[in-house]
Length: 243
Image 1 (cartoon, rainbow, N blue to C red):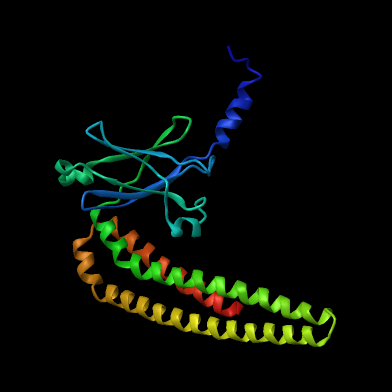
Image 2 (cartoon, rainbow, N blue to C red):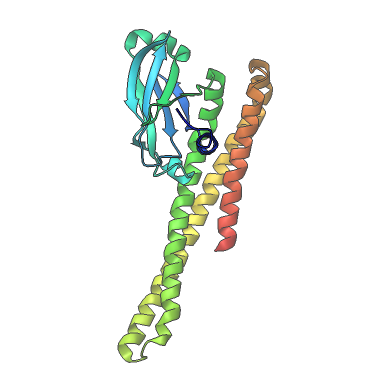
């Protein structure tokens, strides 16, 4: 029997346990897409079970790589899953329950978005992903530029003979080339941001139609989408300001 002195410690450990994170991103053509992550065991790949009417109809492991997960601090990014449902059950894909299970056997239900939420997310996901990918490439180029600049700053500390002068010239040329490349990346990013603005403008034009079709719970989803657009634009501007 556990002594009373041990119970506060056990309760404290239980309070410190973080719940598993994850969600179902979409259900499309009989396939369930999503991710699951245990912050208490970030290197662990969670097991995913799909239930319908209380019975397990499909299983998988959340071990697929998704760059957007790594970008958002979800471990190493290899925590996504894709589960194909049996053909006869495609028509009931929106009735399933998706559970994530960790190594200790604990389970947690993952939220399955409603069809109208999935439609709204799909509308913005593709252009937003392109912008974020461009930001990743731009940040990598910026880091490379910073490394070259530091090399250029250290070069005068080395003996100033002819061979070092030649090396210094090469480094200077490399830095200039990187500056040109970063400038081109910024131009590409501007183009994608303009396209994203066009998508948002199209959403605004159809907003009245969407309001008529959407339920009250769909309105917060639209607000979330505009917040994501603002985040992407803000990240781009912040990166431009740093260069």
